Image (cartoon, rainbow, N blue to C red; front, side):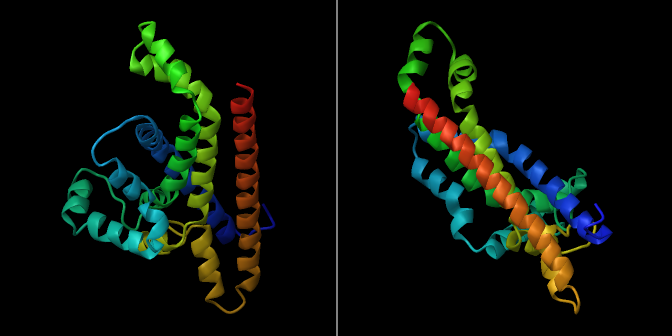
Length: 230
């Protein structure tokens, strides 16, 4: 890609890598929590719902700082993880973790709305035929909510691509290691003559965000049409 310099392309490549793994890692947890919030009744349900949406309300820098003091090598949790070969602070894996946490609320909300749109009587009918909860979910619920799951994954991916505050606080801004696309834009704007590079990366960010939003909107329309025709 001659349009971007090697440093710019490295930031885009790292952002795609971070966003992909952030989405993949968050997806199963997001689906489980979305199903629990949509279908189950249990003590502390509203507290869980609040915790899920907390990253949307807190300043991203606060989320990044909480991750830093929890998972840094000097912290008990971070020190233990490092002793078994797992490192997050000042590593691209930490950028993926921070980005995944910031995109998690959007992912859960999209999947929860999709699950709530499914008529529980369909699940109950399958259960009366002797199917287990796991089998009912795999054969009845999941196929019907799959568009919502995809929409949530896309929104989570887009949010991860654009995450800046939590990421730079937790893993810093190290070129080639933790410098994602938003961090690279910030870095280029801090040096004389970096405006052109920043503008090119802004164009990439806008293109990715618009594509994700259009794809998510298309999937949402498909879900609405499917529910309306059911």
